[in-house]
Image (cartoon, rainbow, N blue to C red; front, side, top):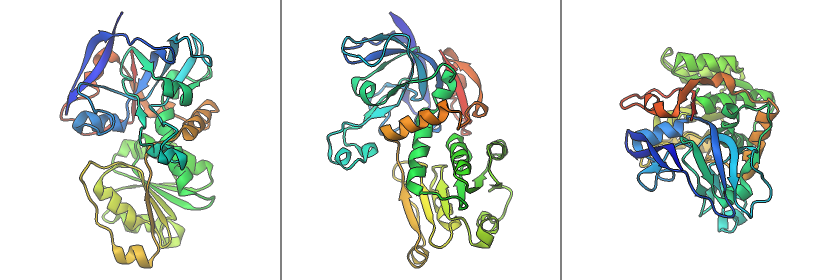
Length: 344
């Protein structure tokens, strides 16, 4: 049996090809994909590759998806054919040093799953066991597919320990930035969103941001953000969700004394940033990175979507068929859209 699937061959070289539908073992399931979503990470991979998601070339492409189980192995007892499901794109081993310390996202044998831009996908046994979930009939596949990036945001918010009435500044108004806006407002925080694309900043306002700041329309974004936060002192917390060295450095200048900065957006390998060591020390700034998600955060994100507490629909700027994927991932195009649903 054949299917259509996207494969990545190198920077800005992706093709939708005909290939075999995967065969499954006793502990695996086969899912017919209902919808996949584009992601900023996919655009980064398309443009320059990814050390974890494209280890072998050609590489399966895409990692946010939801669909229906059409076949399952004899040893799979907790699911059945016809179940509507969403699968995480990874699962920890549960046995290594980091898993024993409950840092599951740092697992030494973290199993990644890619290949969401396809008609079918095989879910490995470890993900079936730890990170495959049924979804309610009322949750559309397109929205359920957002569980993976939302899980990363939930993980970050757990780490940043945001309190009600604090002010948080989100640097970046992409899909994850908009998830941060929604979660922060639910926690009772004041939200400032910094970005450069008018349409994305407008979306941030639509999703609840109290203020938006365009780095293209202001000479001094640091001054403007400080004027909007804590009577001029600056925000209590800053999340960098753009993934560029210059915005990492900007984030360290935005935060108030004693504040905390989360470096959420991943930069290109080999890049570096400069920090003001005097300010970092004498103003007790707290910097930390957050990577990926854990099974706990993935399950929590599905609950948020299923209960309607996080809105995704207005982030999805249309649909494309799988066969037209090259119209979404185009050579030389640097702008990254919010979300596009890919329908097999």
